[in-house]
Length: 189
Image (tube, rainbow, N blue to C red; front, side, top):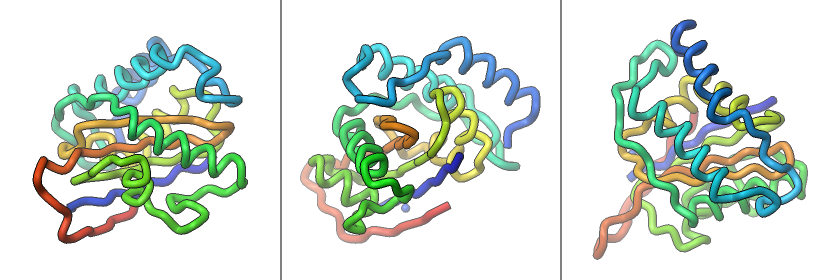
């Protein structure tokens, strides 16, 4: 299994916490997303389960690596972020590659702009090989950089998709009205 994280900005949990998180994830998310298509299952139900799992972690706070992350506001589901996550996971599945960049070299910011998401902050967690949502969440939370992305206080919205063995989690916050991007900085973990 592989995981990866990237964060674009206008910018390990204790054993007991991990056991509690695993129990919560298994209880709420003991589901396997259908690898065939993003429409073969009850999408609304899946979106709510994903959002609930991520927000449960965010509002409680957690430890990412050695750093204790304070609780942050819950995220809202955004269908444009879901679409960009779905399209990137689909592209990786169809072409057999694993990367934060698309085949044409587009980064997460480019991918969000392609679905008309005007972002102020954008981030991406990717994973390969996990069979269930609970597995990918545990892997991301055990990774300091992925965990910090999930806990990033400036992120306000998210979308997540899986096609085949490829998982993509897009996070963002929209650009305020009547503003434009003048500088972009990148940080990868």
